[in-house]
Image (cartoon, rainbow, N blue to C red):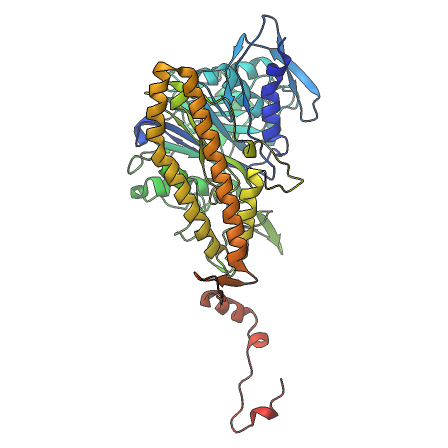
Amino acid sequence: MNTRCSLAGVWFFASVFACVPEVIACTNILVTKGASADGSVIITYTCDGEFHPTLRRYPAADYEPGEWLEIKDWSDNVRGKIKQVEHTYAVVGLMNEHQLAISETTASGREELVNPEGLLHYWDLMRLALQRAKTAREAIKVMTDLVAEHGYRSMGESISIADPLEAWILEIFGPGPGGTGAEWVALKVPDGYVSCHANKARIGEFPRNDPENCLYSANAISFAVEKGYFDPIAGKPFRFCEAYCPSTPRNCRYAAGRVWSIFRRAAPSLNLSPDYFRAVEDAEPYPLWVKPDRKLSVGDVFSLMRDHFEGTDYDMTKGVDAGPYGSPLRCRPIDWSIEGAEYAWERPISTQQTGFTFVSQSRSWLPDPIGGVYWYGVDDTYTTCYVPLYCGITGLPESYTVGSLREFSWDSAWWVFNFAANYANLRYVDMVEDIQAVQRDLEGNLLELQPAVEKTALELYKTDPELMTRYLTDYSVSHAEQVVKRWRALAEHLVTRYNDGYVKDERGRPREQGYTEEWLRNVVKLRPDQLRLREKPADVPESKLVD
């Protein structure tokens, strides 16, 4: 048995998810071929949580008939085993060698449906699908067949799946303790449309006789009826999301706000109301997908992943809670209570608690090693820089593969990006402009280089595929490391330019900048008597005044 290869996938996912509690904290966007500017199928991911991600690659592997794969927990205890397949595909991050990419958001739903006797968590299913499937449809079959045989262990999940031709959403919930299998629905996003989900189930009504566009478990409806989640004689249509993950003011505020903010920017002409995410009574849920006002480039999708509700009534850079320097960052917990009343900060797409993020490109007109690009970033989407990692590469940038949450290191890309982002909190409104200037320069350069790089790669693919692999590996690794090197210099620049409350001008001279008048007015309203200087009474010498 090839033990090293059989355990490589476990090691990869353990390194990504080992320190992440099963929390409700991720965002996905799906862009179909007809909705993208160049015909790419694109999906995105923010893997949010306080953990140090470790990027991994594991190669394709072959196995003998009758071999088994052990399924382990984070303490390396074996929970069970499944039959190994004869061949597994190579994977970089969460994209495999056939341009198949997978991401997820935890939908939670009904806690009583979690099955602790199930063998497979959602991250097991993602790993196994990437190893065993070439297309999105195959990935859905791999995952649903496995849970039917071995059981599903996680909370509710919404899973995005993309290949060079299609984008699908799979939503899955367990049967509760002692149950078997799982209940699920998978829908293909119509070509020309954009979809998204963010920690709440989104699939409502679905066609029951359209296997080209919809797949679902045999008991998806009857199980809901049995559990009392749906009354078939009430005269209302069955909505999968409301049966298994009912809407509440809390999850609408937390999850639907991100959906609204993605759609309001992708399709502003729809003028979608914020009422649903503000839990206004009888407000219409947002559609599962929308047609964008214009086709989206990869750079446009980067921008969609960067948002704090700027320019809306919920702009997190405004108000007293943004502090003197317009910071959109809010410390957790995200909600709290005072004197019996419940409150919550807005939950944006961009958050400092993001561990890693990706934007994947799958392209049908290019060979797989060139067509699949895994644009990868660490930490907050707003202040990260996406770097291109081609799905056929055989090496990784070392700075993205090392480090620990317990110890700061300039050798770790995650710590470098965290240092710059955290230091920017001291004077956010100014420093974020410096950060994003470097971000635009680097990402713009990488996007501009892409056609030339791929033209060369395609010529090599026809004449010397092995050299093509070396070329794309060298390009991906060297440019990712250049980005980290530039970010270290950026961090040092921030420390020297913004020091002790001063801001250095173009000549390096410290200048007082103070605070905005709006914030000073808020301070005066809170403490007018303490801060106000006493005025000098008429005809009283200044020397007689007592401070």
